[in-house]
Length: 105
Image (cartoon, rainbow, N blue to C red):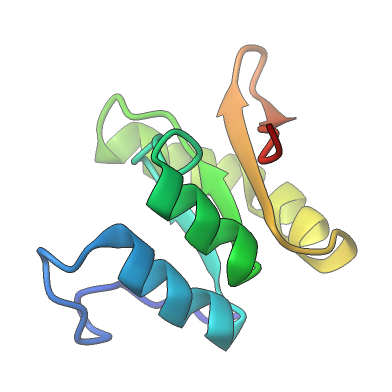
């Protein structure tokens, strides 16, 4: 499994989320982010759905906590990514569990 950072992929810092989500979805990459909003903004939510993005929201109390979450939960993220069809968004929260965020209205 390879990890890629958006900066090293040439995505502009100010690139709209729906645009890079399209690219990531087409490449079959998994999004791991602290930016917990893709399901709340219509253009971003539609990009997740249309381009079959697999996404995990991690706690946003700093990079260290996010890194710790990745280390603790990477096996579960891989398991979910391999076994579930896209699109999906899971959020890591209470009791250190992943909760599925509904994408349909």
